[in-house]
Image (cartoon, rainbow, N blue to C red; front, side, top):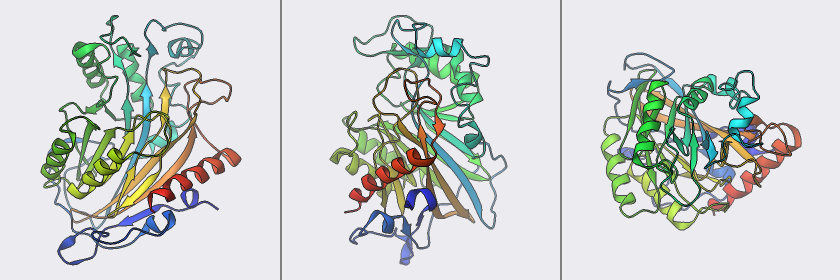
Length: 366
Protein backbone atom coordinates (compact mmCIF):
# COMPACT_ATOMS: atom_id res chain seq x y z
CA UNK A 1 0.00 0.00 0.00
CA UNK A 2 1.85 3.07 -1.24
CA UNK A 3 1.84 6.43 0.48
CA UNK A 4 1.66 8.37 -2.76
CA UNK A 5 -1.24 6.36 -4.12
CA UNK A 6 -3.58 6.60 -1.14
CA UNK A 7 -2.61 9.70 0.81
CA UNK A 8 -2.47 13.34 -0.05
CA UNK A 9 0.94 14.79 0.77
CA UNK A 10 -0.05 17.08 3.63
CA UNK A 11 2.12 20.07 4.45
CA UNK A 12 0.32 22.53 6.73
CA UNK A 13 2.40 25.49 7.75
CA UNK A 14 4.38 26.37 10.88
CA UNK A 15 2.66 27.15 14.16
CA UNK A 16 5.54 28.92 15.88
CA UNK A 17 5.18 32.54 17.00
CA UNK A 18 5.70 35.09 14.25
CA UNK A 19 4.52 32.68 11.55
CA UNK A 20 7.90 31.08 10.75
CA UNK A 21 7.63 27.96 8.64
CA UNK A 22 7.88 24.56 10.21
CA UNK A 23 11.29 22.95 10.01
CA UNK A 24 13.57 25.98 10.39
CA UNK A 25 16.59 24.89 12.36
CA UNK A 26 15.18 21.39 12.92
CA UNK A 27 16.36 18.04 11.70
CA UNK A 28 14.52 16.60 8.73
CA UNK A 29 11.85 13.91 8.96
CA UNK A 30 13.03 10.35 9.40
CA UNK A 31 11.28 9.10 6.26
CA UNK A 32 9.40 10.33 3.23
CA UNK A 33 6.14 9.24 4.85
CA UNK A 34 6.84 11.53 7.80
CA UNK A 35 7.69 14.38 5.43
CA UNK A 36 4.29 14.11 3.78
CA UNK A 37 2.44 14.41 7.06
CA UNK A 38 3.72 17.75 8.35
CA UNK A 39 0.95 19.47 10.32
CA UNK A 40 0.83 23.04 11.63
CA UNK A 41 -0.74 26.50 11.23
CA UNK A 42 0.16 29.46 9.03
CA UNK A 43 0.87 33.12 8.63
CA UNK A 44 0.59 34.15 5.01
CA UNK A 45 0.17 37.14 2.75
CA UNK A 46 -3.01 38.97 1.87
CA UNK A 47 -3.89 38.61 -1.81
CA UNK A 48 -4.61 41.65 -3.97
CA UNK A 49 -7.02 41.89 -6.86
CA UNK A 50 -4.62 42.32 -9.79
CA UNK A 51 -4.07 39.66 -12.43
CA UNK A 52 -6.13 37.57 -14.82
CA UNK A 53 -8.76 35.01 -14.09
CA UNK A 54 -8.18 31.27 -13.94
CA UNK A 55 -10.73 28.49 -14.34
CA UNK A 56 -12.22 29.55 -11.03
CA UNK A 57 -13.36 33.11 -11.66
CA UNK A 58 -14.39 35.87 -9.31
CA UNK A 59 -13.34 39.07 -7.60
CA UNK A 60 -10.75 38.90 -4.83
CA UNK A 61 -12.62 38.48 -1.54
CA UNK A 62 -12.40 36.47 1.63
CA UNK A 63 -14.02 33.05 2.10
CA UNK A 64 -14.22 30.84 5.20
CA UNK A 65 -11.86 28.48 3.34
CA UNK A 66 -11.02 28.41 -0.34
CA UNK A 67 -9.49 25.34 -1.96
CA UNK A 68 -7.53 25.82 -5.18
CA UNK A 69 -6.33 22.78 -7.13
CA UNK A 70 -3.30 23.19 -9.40
CA UNK A 71 -2.13 20.41 -11.72
CA UNK A 72 1.41 20.30 -13.08
CA UNK A 73 2.78 18.22 -15.94
CA UNK A 74 6.31 17.99 -17.29
CA UNK A 75 8.04 18.60 -20.59
CA UNK A 76 5.66 19.11 -23.51
CA UNK A 77 7.17 19.36 -27.00
CA UNK A 78 4.31 20.15 -29.38
CA UNK A 79 6.25 19.59 -32.57
CA UNK A 80 9.09 17.72 -34.22
CA UNK A 81 12.84 17.88 -34.37
CA UNK A 82 14.28 19.93 -37.24
CA UNK A 83 13.26 18.60 -40.67
CA UNK A 84 11.34 15.78 -38.99
CA UNK A 85 7.82 17.06 -39.59
CA UNK A 86 5.72 14.49 -41.42
CA UNK A 87 8.23 11.66 -41.11
CA UNK A 88 6.73 8.26 -40.16
CA UNK A 89 6.24 8.10 -36.42
CA UNK A 90 6.69 11.85 -35.95
CA UNK A 91 4.40 14.02 -33.87
CA UNK A 92 2.92 15.80 -36.88
CA UNK A 93 2.41 12.51 -38.72
CA UNK A 94 0.56 11.05 -35.73
CA UNK A 95 -1.71 14.10 -35.53
CA UNK A 96 -2.48 13.80 -39.25
CA UNK A 97 -3.96 10.34 -38.61
CA UNK A 98 -6.46 11.62 -36.03
CA UNK A 99 -10.01 12.75 -36.67
CA UNK A 100 -9.62 15.52 -34.05
CA UNK A 101 -5.89 16.20 -34.04
CA UNK A 102 -5.86 19.15 -31.62
CA UNK A 103 -7.77 17.20 -28.97
CA UNK A 104 -5.77 14.00 -29.42
CA UNK A 105 -2.55 14.52 -27.37
CA UNK A 106 -4.23 15.27 -24.03
CA UNK A 107 -7.36 13.18 -24.61
CA UNK A 108 -6.22 10.43 -22.23
CA UNK A 109 -5.95 12.82 -19.29
CA UNK A 110 -8.17 15.77 -20.23
CA UNK A 111 -10.92 14.76 -17.81
CA UNK A 112 -8.45 15.11 -14.92
CA UNK A 113 -7.09 18.44 -16.11
CA UNK A 114 -10.58 19.79 -16.78
CA UNK A 115 -11.46 19.27 -13.12
CA UNK A 116 -8.78 21.48 -11.58
CA UNK A 117 -8.48 25.26 -11.26
CA UNK A 118 -5.21 25.65 -13.14
CA UNK A 119 -2.99 23.34 -15.20
CA UNK A 120 0.68 24.23 -15.75
CA UNK A 121 3.02 22.63 -18.32
CA UNK A 122 6.59 23.21 -19.42
CA UNK A 123 6.47 24.00 -23.15
CA UNK A 124 9.66 23.02 -24.96
CA UNK A 125 10.34 24.27 -28.47
CA UNK A 126 8.94 27.06 -30.63
CA UNK A 127 5.52 27.41 -32.20
CA UNK A 128 6.60 29.17 -35.37
CA UNK A 129 6.68 28.94 -39.15
CA UNK A 130 10.36 29.88 -39.21
CA UNK A 131 12.47 27.15 -40.76
CA UNK A 132 16.01 27.90 -39.69
CA UNK A 133 17.02 27.22 -36.07
CA UNK A 134 19.83 29.19 -34.46
CA UNK A 135 21.33 26.10 -32.83
CA UNK A 136 23.30 23.23 -34.33
CA UNK A 137 21.89 20.92 -31.66
CA UNK A 138 18.40 19.55 -31.14
CA UNK A 139 15.79 22.06 -32.28
CA UNK A 140 12.05 21.59 -31.68
CA UNK A 141 9.39 23.32 -33.75
CA UNK A 142 5.63 23.03 -34.07
CA UNK A 143 3.04 24.89 -36.10
CA UNK A 144 1.66 28.04 -34.44
CA UNK A 145 -1.84 26.58 -34.43
CA UNK A 146 -0.59 23.72 -32.24
CA UNK A 147 -1.26 26.06 -29.32
CA UNK A 148 -4.86 24.86 -29.71
CA UNK A 149 -3.66 21.48 -28.36
CA UNK A 150 -3.19 23.15 -24.99
CA UNK A 151 -6.62 24.76 -25.12
CA UNK A 152 -8.31 21.48 -25.99
CA UNK A 153 -6.27 19.71 -23.29
CA UNK A 154 -7.36 22.12 -20.54
CA UNK A 155 -3.84 23.48 -20.04
CA UNK A 156 -4.14 27.16 -19.16
CA UNK A 157 -0.53 28.12 -18.46
CA UNK A 158 2.92 27.16 -19.75
CA UNK A 159 6.45 27.92 -18.66
CA UNK A 160 8.85 29.07 -21.37
CA UNK A 161 12.03 29.34 -19.29
CA UNK A 162 13.85 26.38 -20.79
CA UNK A 163 16.66 25.57 -23.23
CA UNK A 164 14.39 25.01 -26.28
CA UNK A 165 12.11 28.06 -26.30
CA UNK A 166 14.70 29.99 -28.29
CA UNK A 167 15.68 27.20 -30.69
CA UNK A 168 14.42 29.46 -33.49
CA UNK A 169 15.75 32.66 -31.98
CA UNK A 170 14.01 35.53 -30.26
CA UNK A 171 11.67 35.83 -33.23
CA UNK A 172 10.62 32.24 -32.74
CA UNK A 173 10.01 32.96 -29.06
CA UNK A 174 7.88 35.97 -29.98
CA UNK A 175 5.92 33.81 -32.41
CA UNK A 176 5.34 31.27 -29.65
CA UNK A 177 4.09 33.90 -27.22
CA UNK A 178 1.81 35.40 -29.85
CA UNK A 179 0.30 32.02 -30.71
CA UNK A 180 -0.26 31.16 -27.06
CA UNK A 181 -1.98 34.48 -26.42
CA UNK A 182 -4.18 34.09 -29.48
CA UNK A 183 -5.38 30.77 -28.07
CA UNK A 184 -5.94 32.09 -24.54
CA UNK A 185 -2.92 30.34 -23.00
CA UNK A 186 -0.92 32.19 -20.36
CA UNK A 187 2.87 31.99 -20.23
CA UNK A 188 5.70 32.92 -17.89
CA UNK A 189 9.49 32.92 -17.88
CA UNK A 190 12.20 35.03 -19.56
CA UNK A 191 11.04 38.11 -17.69
CA UNK A 192 7.30 37.43 -17.93
CA UNK A 193 5.30 36.81 -14.75
CA UNK A 194 1.83 35.27 -14.76
CA UNK A 195 -0.52 36.78 -12.18
CA UNK A 196 -4.12 35.61 -12.03
CA UNK A 197 -7.00 35.61 -9.57
CA UNK A 198 -8.51 32.17 -8.99
CA UNK A 199 -11.52 31.85 -6.71
CA UNK A 200 -10.71 35.26 -5.30
CA UNK A 201 -7.07 34.39 -4.55
CA UNK A 202 -4.04 35.93 -6.29
CA UNK A 203 -1.78 33.20 -7.71
CA UNK A 204 1.63 34.06 -9.19
CA UNK A 205 3.81 31.86 -11.41
CA UNK A 206 7.53 32.50 -11.91
CA UNK A 207 9.97 30.56 -14.10
CA UNK A 208 13.76 30.31 -14.35
CA UNK A 209 16.53 28.29 -15.95
CA UNK A 210 18.53 26.87 -13.07
CA UNK A 211 22.31 26.94 -12.92
CA UNK A 212 22.77 30.16 -14.86
CA UNK A 213 24.73 33.01 -13.35
CA UNK A 214 22.50 35.23 -11.29
CA UNK A 215 19.50 32.87 -11.25
CA UNK A 216 19.52 32.54 -7.45
CA UNK A 217 19.63 36.30 -6.88
CA UNK A 218 16.89 37.07 -9.42
CA UNK A 219 14.68 34.25 -8.22
CA UNK A 220 14.88 35.18 -4.54
CA UNK A 221 14.30 38.86 -5.32
CA UNK A 222 11.24 38.08 -7.45
CA UNK A 223 9.72 35.65 -4.94
CA UNK A 224 10.18 38.05 -2.04
CA UNK A 225 8.53 40.84 -4.04
CA UNK A 226 5.58 38.76 -5.29
CA UNK A 227 4.95 37.07 -1.94
CA UNK A 228 4.16 40.44 -0.37
CA UNK A 229 0.84 40.55 -2.23
CA UNK A 230 0.13 37.04 -3.56
CA UNK A 231 -1.39 34.32 -1.40
CA UNK A 232 0.20 31.61 -3.58
CA UNK A 233 3.57 31.80 -5.37
CA UNK A 234 4.56 28.88 -7.63
CA UNK A 235 8.10 28.67 -8.98
CA UNK A 236 9.12 26.50 -11.97
CA UNK A 237 12.79 25.69 -12.51
CA UNK A 238 14.42 24.13 -15.57
CA UNK A 239 17.40 22.38 -13.99
CA UNK A 240 19.27 19.16 -13.31
CA UNK A 241 21.00 16.58 -15.49
CA UNK A 242 19.19 14.78 -18.29
CA UNK A 243 18.19 11.15 -17.58
CA UNK A 244 19.44 11.31 -13.97
CA UNK A 245 16.72 10.56 -11.40
CA UNK A 246 18.48 12.14 -8.40
CA UNK A 247 18.54 15.94 -8.01
CA UNK A 248 22.00 17.48 -7.86
CA UNK A 249 23.21 19.98 -5.27
CA UNK A 250 22.34 22.96 -7.47
CA UNK A 251 18.74 21.80 -7.61
CA UNK A 252 18.64 21.27 -3.86
CA UNK A 253 20.11 24.70 -3.14
CA UNK A 254 17.80 26.51 -5.56
CA UNK A 255 14.71 24.63 -4.40
CA UNK A 256 15.41 25.33 -0.73
CA UNK A 257 16.21 28.98 -1.44
CA UNK A 258 12.91 29.37 -3.31
CA UNK A 259 10.95 28.04 -0.35
CA UNK A 260 12.85 30.16 2.16
CA UNK A 261 12.12 33.23 0.02
CA UNK A 262 8.38 32.51 0.07
CA UNK A 263 7.57 30.00 -2.71
CA UNK A 264 4.56 27.82 -1.91
CA UNK A 265 5.31 25.14 -4.53
CA UNK A 266 8.45 24.43 -6.57
CA UNK A 267 8.13 22.51 -9.85
CA UNK A 268 11.12 21.11 -11.74
CA UNK A 269 11.77 19.84 -15.25
CA UNK A 270 14.53 19.12 -17.78
CA UNK A 271 15.89 15.69 -16.68
CA UNK A 272 13.16 13.97 -18.80
CA UNK A 273 12.74 11.39 -16.00
CA UNK A 274 10.95 11.49 -12.68
CA UNK A 275 12.82 12.65 -9.61
CA UNK A 276 11.65 12.63 -6.00
CA UNK A 277 9.40 15.01 -4.11
CA UNK A 278 10.77 16.75 -1.03
CA UNK A 279 8.78 18.23 1.85
CA UNK A 280 10.77 21.25 3.02
CA UNK A 281 9.61 23.79 5.59
CA UNK A 282 5.98 22.95 4.98
CA UNK A 283 6.19 23.10 1.18
CA UNK A 284 6.69 20.59 -1.63
CA UNK A 285 9.58 20.61 -4.09
CA UNK A 286 8.83 18.40 -7.10
CA UNK A 287 12.31 18.02 -8.54
CA UNK A 288 11.36 16.61 -11.94
CA UNK A 289 7.99 15.92 -13.50
CA UNK A 290 9.48 13.95 -16.40
CA UNK A 291 8.16 14.13 -19.96
CA UNK A 292 4.49 14.42 -20.86
CA UNK A 293 3.28 15.13 -24.41
CA UNK A 294 6.77 14.92 -25.86
CA UNK A 295 6.73 15.10 -29.64
CA UNK A 296 10.51 15.34 -29.97
CA UNK A 297 11.13 11.64 -29.27
CA UNK A 298 9.13 8.81 -30.83
CA UNK A 299 11.11 6.06 -29.06
CA UNK A 300 11.96 7.30 -25.54
CA UNK A 301 13.71 4.98 -23.11
CA UNK A 302 11.79 6.35 -20.13
CA UNK A 303 8.01 6.53 -20.30
CA UNK A 304 7.00 6.94 -16.65
CA UNK A 305 5.48 10.30 -15.82
CA UNK A 306 2.87 11.86 -13.57
CA UNK A 307 0.33 14.56 -13.06
CA UNK A 308 1.23 16.29 -9.81
CA UNK A 309 -1.68 18.02 -8.11
CA UNK A 310 -1.38 20.47 -5.24
CA UNK A 311 -4.37 21.69 -3.28
CA UNK A 312 -3.96 25.06 -1.58
CA UNK A 313 -6.29 25.90 1.30
CA UNK A 314 -6.66 29.65 1.83
CA UNK A 315 -8.58 31.21 4.70
CA UNK A 316 -9.14 34.97 4.99
CA UNK A 317 -6.36 35.68 2.54
CA UNK A 318 -3.83 33.39 4.23
CA UNK A 319 -2.52 30.08 2.98
CA UNK A 320 -3.28 27.61 5.76
CA UNK A 321 -2.12 24.28 4.38
CA UNK A 322 -1.24 22.42 1.21
CA UNK A 323 -1.96 18.86 0.13
CA UNK A 324 -0.42 17.10 -2.85
CA UNK A 325 -1.05 13.91 -4.75
CA UNK A 326 0.56 12.00 -7.59
CA UNK A 327 -1.40 10.56 -10.51
CA UNK A 328 0.86 7.99 -12.27
CA UNK A 329 1.04 8.33 -16.04
CA UNK A 330 2.73 6.70 -19.01
CA UNK A 331 3.56 9.22 -21.76
CA UNK A 332 2.08 6.97 -24.45
CA UNK A 333 -1.12 4.95 -24.70
CA UNK A 334 0.87 2.14 -26.31
CA UNK A 335 4.02 0.47 -25.00
CA UNK A 336 6.01 -0.21 -28.19
CA UNK A 337 6.42 3.43 -29.27
CA UNK A 338 5.48 6.95 -28.30
CA UNK A 339 2.08 7.84 -29.72
CA UNK A 340 2.21 11.20 -27.88
CA UNK A 341 -0.96 10.53 -25.88
CA UNK A 342 -0.31 10.19 -22.13
CA UNK A 343 -2.64 7.97 -20.16
CA UNK A 344 -3.23 7.24 -16.49
CA UNK A 345 -1.63 4.04 -15.26
CA UNK A 346 -3.50 1.24 -13.52
CA UNK A 347 -2.64 -2.04 -11.83
CA UNK A 348 0.97 -3.21 -11.61
CA UNK A 349 2.36 -0.35 -13.73
CA UNK A 350 0.77 2.18 -11.39
CA UNK A 351 2.03 0.39 -8.29
CA UNK A 352 5.54 0.13 -9.70
CA UNK A 353 5.76 3.82 -10.51
CA UNK A 354 4.52 4.84 -7.06
CA UNK A 355 6.99 2.51 -5.37
CA UNK A 356 9.86 3.99 -7.39
CA UNK A 357 8.79 7.55 -6.62
CA UNK A 358 8.47 6.65 -2.95
CA UNK A 359 12.07 5.41 -2.93
CA UNK A 360 13.38 8.48 -4.73
CA UNK A 361 11.49 10.78 -2.38
CA UNK A 362 12.44 8.97 0.81
CA UNK A 363 16.11 9.40 -0.06
CA UNK A 364 15.66 13.19 -0.08
CA UNK A 365 14.39 13.18 3.50
CA UNK A 366 17.53 11.58 4.94
